[in-house]
Length: 147
Image 1 (spheres, helix red, strand yellow):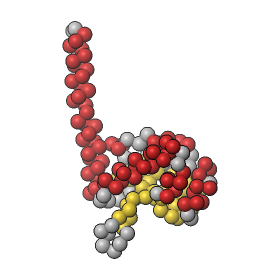
Image 2 (cartoon, rainbow, N blue to C red; image 1 turned 135 degrees about the horizontal axis):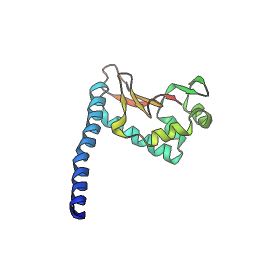
Image 3 (cartoon, rainbow, N blue to C red; image 1 turned 90 degrees about the vertical axis):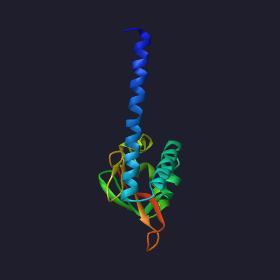
Image 4 (cartoon, rainbow, N blue to C red; image 1 turned 180 degrees about the vertical axis):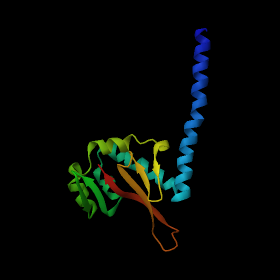
């Protein structure tokens, strides 16, 4: 087989694989939309949190959590009562491995359940809550961190 034929075959296989990845991402989107609604809001928050983790922006991470926030760290469970508490103790409450998992989370590898969406094999859970009785307005936020 000529080098050109091998390259053409490799390119064709790469192009053929791309729709499968897009299909997986679409399936995740559809699953989030079906169970929680506002998949767009979820993916917006995911991008914000990934940028914050990459930049060491603990304020943005803390501002996008629901309190009291359940954090499992150091072999114990903590109820973090407000954003400032998370910021003050961030390095002991959120492990570098958890931030790494957040930064590397692929959209097609999310855990989607009725409780929320798990990142990093459940290291971080995000959920969508209703802001009014009719649930016409919702907000995505971090529900728990499990180091």
